[in-house]
Image (cartoon, rainbow, N blue to C red; front, side):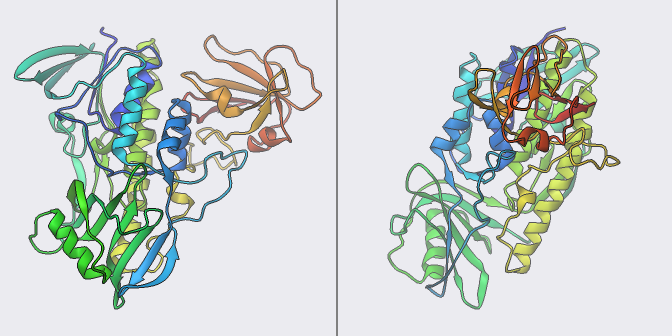
Length: 473
């Protein structure tokens, strides 16, 4: 059987999966039917759990350097400044949660960072390459690709459809995409410049008697661009002129001139969930498996989490252990359904004009995602996210639990006791200051690790490659 994984779709989901496989030395090809890379902001909100994934994939520094914190929004009604609002108040990092705040970076910039990291492993996106068909047998998948009119048959062990809401992979498999599209609501989204506005802030312009029916201009990092969002009525076609009409009408100023429209789209509430995420050797991830309203900033982040969950399981299967593959659908479809409900609830608030419609709580940060059995009620249980904590190595140098977890491997922690692990699974004793044990060990700082893991002497915790607790003993 070919050991190749073919990834269809080179958005954030497909790139994350290809990167996770490449760093495990799994042969991977990633294709996209588009002739050029996407050049818009679209999914510009990166949630805290995704920042942790980026830490593990060694792209976090680049993401932080290129992005910015979520901006303060200045609310103007009838042209008068009335208030400042934040979607969420910034909070300080804790030993368990090192990246507690969302981060803003245009999706095209996030994709470019992931592509650059993937290229370090010798893997490049094959643009202008479309999947036109695939068949399966007991040993894998035969995919037919087309590029510049030339067709190629590719043999792969597994194929992953990360090719968006109109997924060719999902349609080829005949998997129902259940849900609805609300044609009564349309939103105009685009990236523009507005040099008369202070780029350090976001803006909400509306009429005083209809405060929730305004336009939003949110600053994007790395230049002078703003992401524009406004309700679209009638049959008007997206254009810079139409966006300018909205601004002229809503902001009650004549000096705000929009220029450099680099991306524009019409968005409709589209809430759908694939009935299955797997068909034998073929998997769905990201928007190919679930599409969300943009409220809450969940879509791109959920897709990245799909990829992070699937990568290590495909690698294990290619190394001879396919027992984890069934858990991909079980774990991720449950999460996607919950996140769809959250996004839809936030959209309903926005449509209904609720005053708190723009506020975002910890439920949107994806730090509370759990794969645990619902019957398990412990504070830290199998399937929970493994928290971070400060440590010192044997030489007294500061480090973190996330430093131990980083990389394509599971990690075994043993609290105050020496430990041995299976080959390929790094094992560490986590000890209190002044405690001596044989073998690899790290020293807890101020008891944070013991508290985060509700550990007693002799506790053993296996942390999966995706940073979730796989076993406790």
